[in-house]
Image 1 (cartoon, one colour):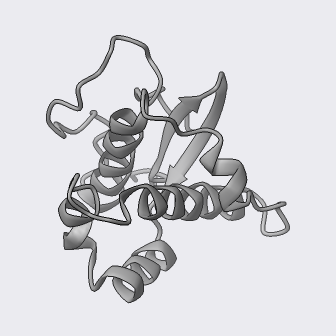
Image 2 (cartoon, helix red, strand yellow; image 1 turned 30 degrees about the horizontal axis):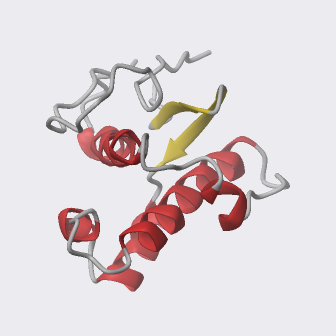
Length: 136
């Protein structure tokens, strides 16, 4: 009998660990806002005039989905608060974490390897890198 994986990708921002969960609810929200999850490349395109707003919204959504999966009465994080966790120095790492969260949620094979999401221009700090999720 195999264990069901929780699909949570973790990221460290400003020294605090956050889970990102690309749940079915999140997929539905992304589809409603952007027309589909296949639009992530367009969302994170430097030519997107709403790049920062969209990244902040998406990160907020994924953090809140994680929080709700842990506790249905969780205090949700506000977009303005999430905006203080993102800066130009970690923007690419945040985007990579969002891609990795999506890949983990849609993998379906139970593997917990970090997906290849390309070079995000990492400056060597570990913000946005996968921190293994432990299952009980």
